[in-house]
Length: 176
Image (tube, rainbow, N blue to C red; front, side, top):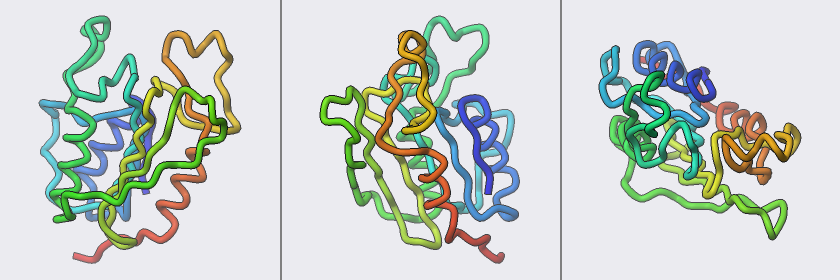
């Protein structure tokens, strides 16, 4: 298993592309794949858990990069394009199963929705945080109120560590 957040999530994509035969699954949080990677694109299907926010000020959900990240960030694929790359590599259907995550609070400004392709053995899942910023979803580890002004809103409808464990616990490395 491999996972990472933000720049660590970008590294997780690279590790997944380069070491897929050695992994059962990987996860990225608040990250997307680069448009022009310094590594070869993946060729081995792998289960993937991808968590992304639609209002992330650092990793644009629609791809590219924001003007104020020019000096430290390369253009990124849209999150949906990153998901599609792994889904198509695994030869999974175009249409996902969609299941909204129960809202912790009815007046919450964000909403988490699971989009799942495939079954237990080979699966790609996108957890789309609608209205969320560059903040890891968590019920327990909350950012201070003033801090959320810059990276954006944090979703509290799920605990990301529990979500990752639920995804990873039955994944096994595929034998070549």
